[in-house]
Image (cartoon, rainbow over all chains, first blue to last red; front, side, top):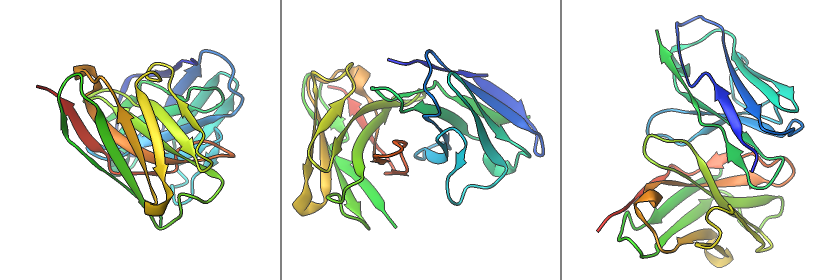
Length: 107
Length: 120
């Protein structure tokens, strides 16, 4: 199975900061990567699919980039509602796998 | 608006079978272009894909769970189900159902999740 490694595992930032989360795949996955946001007690919410396509209704401050093995999720200006845990997911190869998550906390 | 809702036993004894159902509303489970998935999350941990079933009935399971998992669909009730046999405490988790488009297979709609605890 393809392993996804996210970094950092946790991150403290302030409202208004620009934040970047990285997801590295153990082998190339083209652009078959999605990003999700999860708040405590809630289901994950799709943010980005196909590495860089913004899901409908997701604010434009979220963006994704990358292909092959290295991917990034960027939040251009953190808002209070963005403090959550973020997961990447690859769907290039069976079985689907997720990264371990990045917890974004308020500084 | 598509909605998914998990239901089933919240407490299962070790060695028994976990059974959950996901009711789909606002769309037909029989329509092409999607598979219907189960994903779980142990308390305080990350997400693990369990498996999915296509509208055709074809199933794909995580190799780590394949010997214990069965996913089935009931088109008459517009729902799909998960059975996980021989459970242990390691199977304690929040279980989510989700929709997965076939062409670009991310998970776009999720249920709210249901906690299943394995304990005697």
